[in-house]
Length: 265
Image 1 (cartoon, helix red, strand yellow):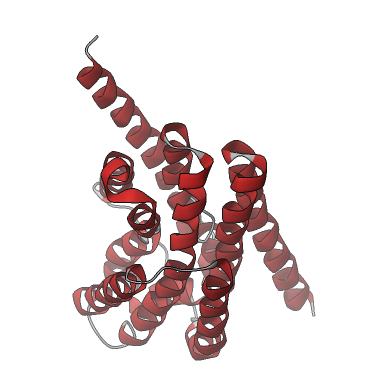
Image 2 (cartoon, rainbow, N blue to C red; image 1 turned 90 degrees about the vertical axis):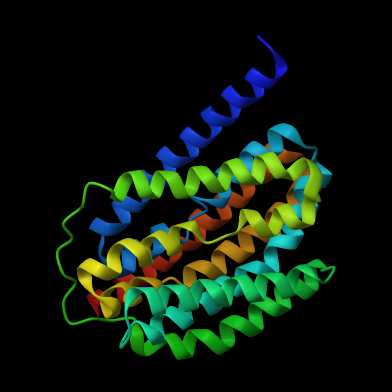
């Protein structure tokens, strides 16, 4: 087998695995309601596969630097969610989702111009969440979450989106370097697919409720990225990835438990 064919086959396999993982998680999200759906959506179901496959091709230093670049990009994602939540109350999917994605792209482009430290990335995330969480509060609840009837193209669309992201990140990582790779790896595929698929069927306010409830989960995701940066340098890529995943899972489980206690009260 030629090296080129071997590379293509491995890349296709990686894209397929990542697509299957994200599609499964997003289907669970649809069936769980806005709160539970938000907790599932903020797990590293898109960035996780990307970083896992990057770790197979690059050393721990590359992954650590990529994670450092990803950390402030997490703040751009919360601004994206806020933009969509506000616009989706009155405007169409194309205006709401298009504006939200444009906000992410502009912020990610600005973030990419700077060389970030761990402290600076954490501070940017802290300031962002302090601003956005109160602003998102009015959009977190809807009177009734409409039933979702899946269309034939939903799964192929999601699979194509995440497979394209993973393929692009893995293929381009060798020549764009860890900083750009870290930004690309955090492109909000899950949120984008939710906006594009859910908005036409259940409406903007209901879709916005899922994204608005994601704010606290994204905070845990940011902590997971910070843990990844630190852990891979100290413990290696495999253990570092596991520590980052565990951070996100434990954070969301705590949020779930807090939510259950509030319901009981």
